[in-house]
Length: 266
Image 1 (cartoon, rainbow, N blue to C red):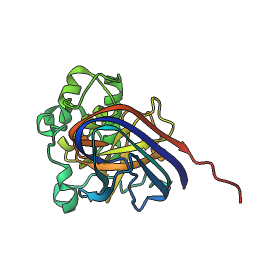
Image 2: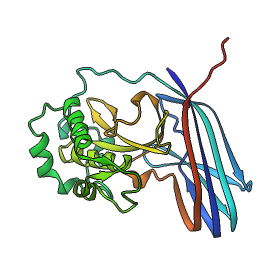
Image 3: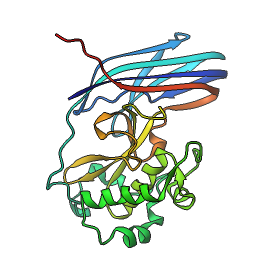
Image 4: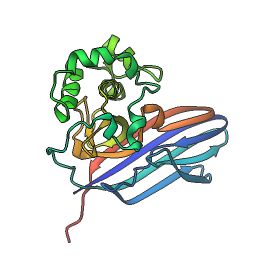
C-alpha cells in the first residue's frame, strides 16, 4: 500500500451570485481509503456534499456572493496495491458484459466511438484481444500525439484530437476511450491527483473493463499508475469537471499537488 497527500487551491473572483459544484474530493473506493481530509472555504459559506453519478463522485455544492472566493482541499489517501496482470484480463463478448458497464460502450460528448469504428478495426483488429490490445492503443496514441498544454479546450473531442495530433492528458484519454469503445471494450474516464506530475494539474486517464475488473491505463505515460488518487469517474471529462459554475465567476489561480506522504516512525 502507499500513502499520498493531495491538495488543491482554487481562487475565484465572483462577479454575481454564483452556484458552484466542485468535484475535487478524493473518492472512497475499495482500493482507495481516505485517512484524513479538510475543506476550507473563504469566505466560510455553507456547503453540502453529494454523491453524483453511477460511481458516486463526491460533489461539494455551494453558493458564493460577489467578491473573492477560495476553496482549499487537503487529503491523505491510502492506495491498495493494484491488481496484477493475469489471464483474466481478456475482453468479454458483448452478451457477457454486466449491465452496469454497458453505458461505457456507447458514444458520449467527447468520445464519438461511432465515427472511428473503421479506424479502430484497421489499426487494432488483428492485435491479440484483451490487455495487449488496450496497451497497443495507448502506444499508438503516444507515438502519434504531441503533448501541448493549451492546445485544446472544453470543445475538443476525440475526433478533433485525431486530426490535429496534439492535446493534453484528457485528450489522450478521450481518444483511447473512443477507440476502445469502437472495439466493444468498455472504457471510462477518470480524473485524479497524480503523484509528482509535471506540470502539476488535475490529471486525466482511463480505465478499460477486462475480465471482471476495471484496469487503469495512461496513454501519456506521465504518471505512475500506482500514484493516481481518483477524484471522479464518468463516461468522459464532462462527468468529472473539477468545477461547474452556474452564474459568473473567473478562476484567478489553481494549484494542484500530490506527493508521497511522510509518515513518522513508530
